[in-house]
Image (cartoon, rainbow over all chains, first blue to last red; front, side):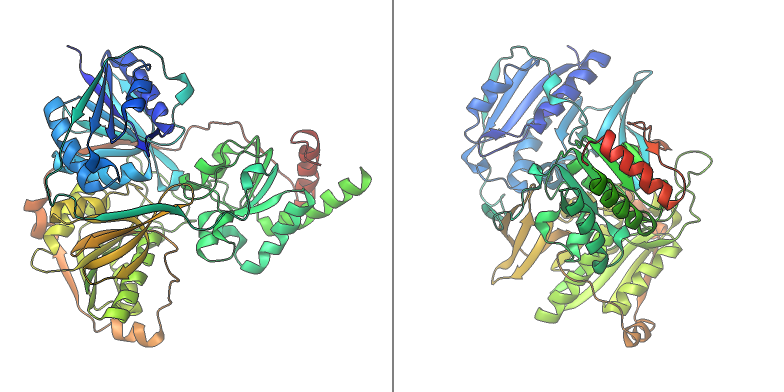
Length: 330
Length: 256
């Protein structure tokens, strides 16, 4: 029997989180390199349809782990159920998408199994029979190849959003095994309530063709006027990285990134944004990315098409004047 | 409420980082600051204490330089501090860090442990959750609101894509705090003065070594990321750059 890679997919309200397909694609890729096999597990209640959908992915087995006690997510129930499941199956490697939910339970699950988890990997390497996971460090300024110290089983890792292409996950047919589980009384110590949205989002930035986004480099709230003028001139909208919204300089609905909006405009101009991972995931699909930042080493330049390593206060005012001239001439 | 806040010292956000010669870690001769989400965790602890009474204790595991983070926390209003001092704490894996902190607070009884949701250096986002497992307590992550109730706490959790959720949790518990949960305060002059007389308990690696175990994961090498895209860097004076950029916005991005 070959070793097994178990993919734990994520579902919410009986809908598969599409990022799960990326994790399946990652597992299939590792399986090709190592000769291991892929199995997939989904956990929750009312998940039969998801299990059927997964059965058409290239895997040898699908597990549907069902319990009414798993209807609303709690880390307590997930850790209890998955600890039992993984202890009995002993897969060589467990892969999950790096979602907020996985961040909430996976480290605890790993430790409960006496193991560790490599989080937020952007890729892997298989070198001389050794599996390494690549992950960003220091806010994306460096990357590290990380190894696990033991020989397995129960190696665990999570993959960052968009690290692999979900549409490239291979198809196949796999049998589904439904496992009914019970969580003992008292094991669930927290009581989650309904999931809600704060207010209707005032602006839907996903519809904007041009976004001018500001980060810490904008220094003061009054300097936002300059960015706003640039955005208006280009017929676009202003947005920001998280710290600017945390400071209250712009409302939360202007935030781009993992906790804010995801956008893919024709043009994205990043002013004084260093390019932390949490921001990048929200905008890296933009067609043209222009980055202006005084730090030439800033990670934003890794994904920019056009870069200006200069003080934004020196560059943006003449830029505004040039655009005005160009528009007047056109 | 007796609250413990776990804090970490990380390289300053705009500090230029260089690799060490072995290519396994950064060169340590940079400026450091408090990990930002940890500053929000401290602020939340101070606010909870102001509302409900109790004590705020701060802990860090790091080299001698990390004491600065504790001094700043004491100046802002924390009551006392615990410093797990050793250079090796800067690079151990998150399970070991959580074990070290658990060992350091063994003789105490906290109601709540707060951490920032992740660190700006490793970005593991694990220490708080692991600490909860070691202590056997329930936990909540990415918290942006805390209200005291009769039976424990009511938490506001941030979920993805603008979604939120309230969750009730009993005490004691561990919470990881999201940046922006509150407005940070500055230390006052009188606070800085008072901090000098507040206790900082030093503990060494030897004090907790038997609780640590071995590192379960290892950084084999650290390097500058391979570029995913070919970036065209514009050079020249500001006026020249502005002209070149407008040309590109017109002819390549086609937005003018």
